[in-house]
Length: 239
Length: 239
DNA sequence: AAAATAGTGTCTATAAGACATTATGTC
DNA sequence: GACATAATGTCTTATAGACACTATTTT
Image (cartoon, each protein chain N blue to C red):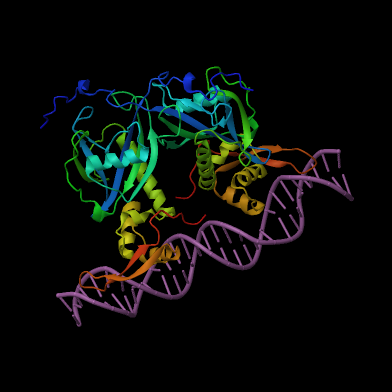
């Protein structure tokens, strides 16, 4: 049946038959802060686009899974140890997207609660491309290096979409939160106001939340019941 | 401000500082044939997994965009000149997914009308990894090479999801079709029967179809009105 | 006229959206 | 008691789903 002598033998495969592109990961880390959605950018310290702002990212190591590379680069360049949520977004591979060489970038988006979004330190590890790291509101961005504007755009669309049919919102809040805080997260990301009664009715009917015995008391007014998500993975609504 | 001598100079970037992975594209081409959803597989003619069935695919060339590579590999290995729809799915990059070397695969899914799914010839180009190509019903698959089972699984989920909130179905039908044909496509992919009156009511209310002046007459019964999609890109419903 | 598929409407149940008042805490 | 936010329900409208008969063509 097989006439090919190479069956089960690696000898016929030459890994250098094709010149190889470089592969990077880039991460759009998003968080709600002060009533606005923010994205984490690094200031590039090296050519190309030195001095411009860019998404954190870098080369995938030869024996490193893609998700691991995304975690590592995010940590090295921004000090974020572990985002609450990380999902692969899309792979950007236009031939001329990087002046250095052919670079294919596997883009990710990461989510963090606003309360955890203070950068552990603003001193990226030596040896990375980053000079510093900083949160920017997504409506007031500096010009971005490479095609990072397009990557960020796609991350925002994906987040907005997923918010409406999954429970990813858990990754943008503390473990325990009030329904008002939850609503505010939705409003920040969807960019519009929501009706309080309808929002609560809907959220509670999904049965993804559970009330805790605790309350949040703050200011001269009635305290609010604290809730938590039953699960810390995104649940898909409906179908 | 800049202490780095490399500003605006490519000299400091060494493209060989990191060993590079290989990058491939793999394509899950799907079509409805004889009341079942089928996927196009190739029989591998070379190590590794020689003799096993796999998704068509291959190495991305160093000066080739990812989408172009997907089109090219699909054509070389299966003779399909142009799928009606092609979308990037996900990038699979587990370290050990290919025994040859580190291979990162950018997976795509492609859609074709059943009527265009006869393979132009079953003789893949020389120099590809394919010995032959063949359609398989997705419920009766042979064991698949590499992680292609997982890729196909994701393609099926994506197609099912997109069918319900976009008009991608256009890519699975001829230019002109009857509402019964449209319904059958939905039934094949969703894997369940749909109510005829509700289906037609819903489809017509979306205003993505237009009636043609033509009818399809076939067999001893009333002829059916032919319709077409107003646009040949997927329209998103609602939102 | 028999056979075969095309084409059509109503009623019910559920979900979404608009909308205002009372409750409970702090100071 | 003044203030500030929490908490709650009804009515209306739109959408989804169950369900059966008539229309038109060929042979």
